[in-house]
Length: 434
Image 1: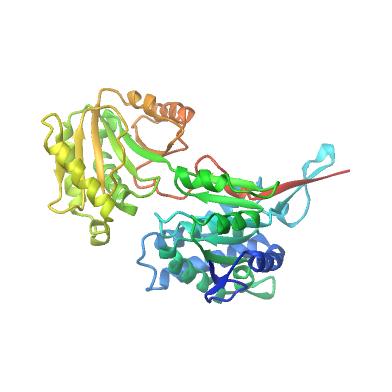
Image 2: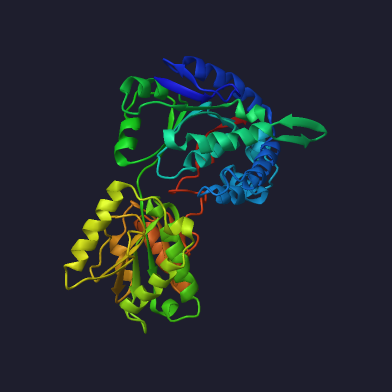
């Protein structure tokens, strides 16, 4: 059974046997979205960012305050400029054909793909919103399959958008014109028939999830022209070189690293699972004690996050293994709130999650390069010398890393993401030659 919670601008629960009516309404309503100037869409989204941060019913949910920052006008314009070859910031490629190679009478225009179907994982409550916003900025209609437990937060945000009005070029516009191009649905992902029907309405599929989820959705029947954008499981970690550890910047970076570990309870692909420290004036156990103090200073909302039973079991088992091994060490909270595992094995540990970080001492930061594969999404790289950091980044990204950041920035939703300029993939680049 397919349940829709938003369709044709109406926020109410409805049941369907297939996606025919949903697709028809989204396809019809996306024409209104297509008719809005990109500058106007950005105005709506910027105003939405200001509205949700004022809503006390949702602004304490993890990730909502970041959404508000991400929806700043300058950030949205930067994203569009990067994705749409829009160096003049006039969004001309979306409004009409525009000269690209004037000497060859070659003009380009960006056209939306049509209906984007979103498969969204449950690990990040606001993930569906970031997927959806990219579809809006590319003027596509959207049908978003959200996890049941996360639908209310997404619907709450969209209700704010529905109520927003913007005056633009002397006319007044309603956010409902954007909201009507969106449908929020749930159905059992294990139901092959519902999944097949969902896949067949898509002109583009955006998939967020495990390897199994990505493989299953990719294998479904689909339209011949359907574009697939997949964001599968990834791994993130951090590295500090000796000069950085011995610099005045170390304490702040270490505290930010602990915050990175705590946000999303390490359930995001961007969550650090291991930190490598080059040998320095601070022994690894002293660094662990510094981290312990930062864990203890975390705000209550990060320190006391809900821990699912599966993660709790992993924490207990991992703690037991380290406590029984004389070659390893451990610092931990009295409860299961956080754990620091210490050993000297130069490897990327299997994630435990639940604010469990593995820390390791190494002779040279370059030793971690051989650990990198295309599965690594992001690295916090604290190398003091700018040129050395740049060379390290070049070597790391050649091996597979997509994002090199500083502590405190690892969860920032930057584009490209996983090496993909998503908005660019969400449009068709069409040409006009004479």
